[in-house]
Length: 587
Image (cartoon, rainbow, N blue to C red; front, side, top):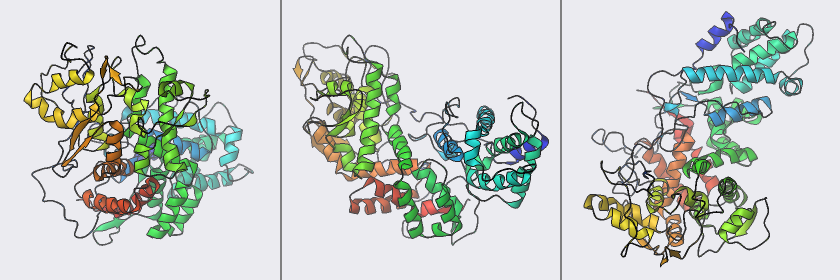
């Protein structure tokens, strides 16, 4: 709606820490491309990256000539983190749904500009600033949500009392109880007075509703624009040695947004008030409770969506002359298959990292069953199906990965190999030199298969061969039994497929016969498990890895390796670190 804000509300919003200052708004983290290839369309494939270290991991130090290596003699310590962490758009939507105990259609964030991606994830706290456009979007969303919230069926679910007289006493109670949930902590006396004062100021501002509904609507509109709603605010500053312990309410918000992607529930807020989150045992008990809820599926799905680049399915296109079975519905099914598989492994099987990469089962509807060649009666619903363990193993042999990391008319070893190095092994190849010719040579007498084309293209120039021969190409060649749609094939252009190779990832060198052999070795390797943990660290803590974080990751890696790298245990372990429970002292 269009109107002038009363002075009280304008001051209230401006006083709250909503608008971020300084630096850019981030952007896609793919800053460069690997030595490329095209299928004739001029599209170059590649990936951004940091050079692999000698130890098999990625060098995450920002200054290679700066501070001395971090010592872990004093144990893991918290890394740098902003005191104000804006909710991501997905967290905003989930929080609004929980706050009002209803879902909104369309999603409140549907028209927001996309959150910037950094190090593969769109929840990097440093980049989650609020610029003018987003500030206006928040205002429009608040106005819309407040209007929908005072509809009788919604208001009845969030109102703690029945209004009597002028309704001011009920409004004051609403401010205290709704505000506690919206701000994820009790309101101060000054805040309760200020927001209660908006009740009378809101009456007459809107063309519809009773005076009571208008007053409540104005309160809601103001709270939804406060920095205390839009951000996770961490203002604790009492020192405990050289770190700052977070308050119970701050820990509660960290916990719920990590494991639910949304606000704390009443049980978690009560635990914070009672001091139960001040001890590792109390925190662990709440973490396990949250993971037992269906709400825990949302952040797990969101992590794997971003880690596996599932959003590429949305723009998937194939040459329908070569692949007449490809449709938009089949692309949607590919995404749904992977999401159901992840949910099955993590929550139904309570499985580990190895199961995620190697389980020869999946979920198919009729279209996907035909693509896999699975026999049986299948319809529109997704059904669990056993796959041939000689041909399929976990996430990386599913069409959602294989089809999105391929061309419209052919497979792409470089796309697939670069993904494995970057996302699965955390040893991304460096960017390519400038001025390269991205076009593959055409088939000929000595160049028959896609593998022949890629080898001829990338191994002539010694500079290109340095990365392609042992780093990028081999893991891509492992998937040559799968065509551009992800279907199994024994022949490529009439010649037998060769999916064998020897892969270098940091200091790790291993040989394989095909993709199933390769992913089984990765699933059991320290390189694979540590990379998966590192990605969860980035996503779960909302920032990239700092040098000091090596100590925390080392400790987590050792703990999880001993227990088999169970994924739910990984999530619990993330909540028990000093990095999670404490803040570093700012310089």
